[in-house]
Image 1 (cartoon, helix red, strand yellow):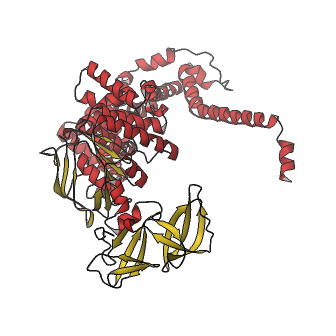
Image 2 (cartoon, each protein chain N blue to C red):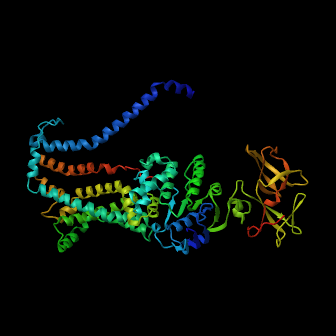
Image 3 (spheres, chains in turn orange, brown):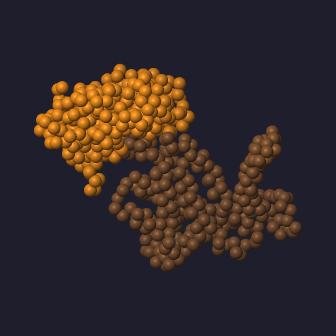
Length: 352
Length: 285
């Protein structure tokens, strides 16, 4: 078993707290992404798990074994680095074989494992070459193959796709998912790219300023962010936040009355995904002033304001709305997230 | 208007002439650089091998006429020449070995670790070169006599190491900085101890630079005259020996001595030239 328990890890660099009591449990065989903007501590956390950085306090366990204080080589994990870190003075074959050679595996096993990993990542034709003869995408595959060749219990990946161009990144993402699904390795994947995290992960841990803001299934995080930060960070366009007045436990949205959670003051923040709306005639719908209408082909992106607060909504491409129009919108009440204006935290979902 | 002038000049011949002028520039540059190094060596060799008459011939032909190894061999047979040559080799060998063995770890530490006083340490390393050796000469001689190092090759080697070590530390620091830390970390993650990672990953990649540092240390020791002259009496290095002997020697002897000073450096650099060019390209990008 290779569950990973991250137990109240803290890390300070001088006065700066990079990680503030981060706790997270990753189940055996699970693919979890650490997602957040740069400087949120995600890479630091990964490096602490790898043993490349020491934590100020806290514990990390793999299975039942505490690995804090062990040298990286004794932790039984493999890692893919952001710059790939393939050894330039070794052939691709020796790169992939590196971990096995260090384990003193016999030649037959090394050969079998290297060929298996190379086959998974389609790098057999390059095995005799040196890395400086390879493209970025090929080196990236070598780095992943090197990690998979040792059949690690735990695989750590630090933004492995960020140095690739957009098209290659999409391709590698799909391949990574295929490869890792068949390997069944517990994987922690650090990224700042939300689409990568959404597409690859079983669960996502969204980090911000050294704190895990929310852990959950990608769709759950997308639809019901725990905090304003998560809603704003995930999704393109980001979630809209509209501050609205509350009267008698209800909020007026055009002609409709929306129930809000109990115990709120006279204001609440309505969190709305851009696509959770449809056009409605004006007195019934909530009023939106459209500043810019951008036809994107697959959909229509509208930027404007509701209650004088900026919003972005998405309508089907077939709708004809022009810049400067005033339109009415009907909100999908099942997809509304209510947030506290003070703390920025969301309330549990209200049944309609 | 620019299109007209462009089309006028941009005939089919233009790219070709551009390429050929580039090539001409390249080769003339190479020729100039080679001449810069080779012509003095050639003239010295001519003087050394031309014998007594060759040196005084006027006008100079610049052609290798009347060349024979005889005058040079005669010079080699002069008492003390071979011995001082070997002494120089010994001192340079000690210098190279010690400055790499001590300098490279210091350079590695400067490149990889953050410690208090790192910048002042670096400055201190450099400042040792700012201290004039002449002031040290007398106290050094006295303490070397006490330690039994006076008039020994080991003593000269030690002093030359002191001269070469600052450069060795600072140059190797730059070399180790050029090896991405991620490569080392990858080695740790995939089963290496720190020491193994150094020898399996860092050292091979830093080798060209370390060899260049060795060449540098060798040349520093080989060229050094002052300390070698002060600290030796009978066991002179070649430079110190030639300095005392040559002023009273005939001209072709002086040329022979000069040639002997030049040749080992050239041969040594030629032997390690392979390492002076980065073979694999260190960048991991």
